[in-house]
Length: 143
Image 1: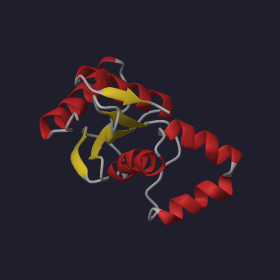
Image 2: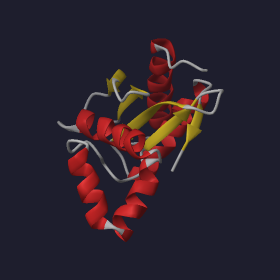
Image 3: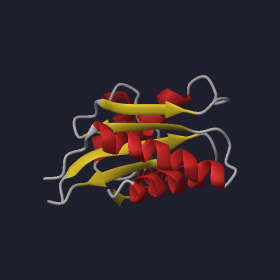
């Protein structure tokens, strides 16, 4: 099984932020959670909004909680808003159902964590997450 090490989590953050700078995205925040939903690493650029850490964590935590990327959670929120509202309550409010929360798959196909990115449009957040995971040599499971 692939382990989500601190070094790999930090590499995701560095690469996601570098990708965001290269594409001139708004200031970003990146959170990496392990498979238990525990914060492994976090980074925020200067100029990010006050609660970006909570949003990044919510994107990643929601993806872990439901086993799908936060893009899929956003689609489900449109189709079944009461269900997503109930799940958000069940997970203590930490579920942000918009793109930017991406699961991380290990070599044995298990989910070993998730990354959440926020700061720009949700599509750009997800793009930065995918770039960070690819650069760190981790397998992304976007939703």
